Image (cartoon, rainbow, N blue to C red; front, side, top):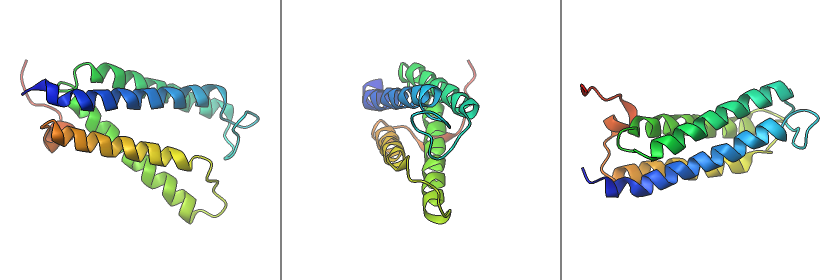
Length: 139
């Protein structure tokens, strides 16, 4: 397969890593009770813990973008994770009384990344099985 067709997907996947790096830094240093962003309230320990996961996801995206064909399963994992986050975020905003809308814009950014992953993966010739199922090839 011509990997040139997957370069746009690699770029957008790396861009998702930039977004997760920003989120990780914010959670580690600015989000949490008694910090710059404290609504909804969150113990700083959990904010730092969550931030560390964001940094791990960012690293995974940066490294996967270097060989997107081989690590296309990671794209599928991020599609599922971001879609779950979007559904969860907006469900809470709509159905949980008093839930703050502080992070409404993150759902839009994650939605755009998810749609970008799907569109560019299809344009690059990746099949659903390559995104969501592990490869059964023997090395």
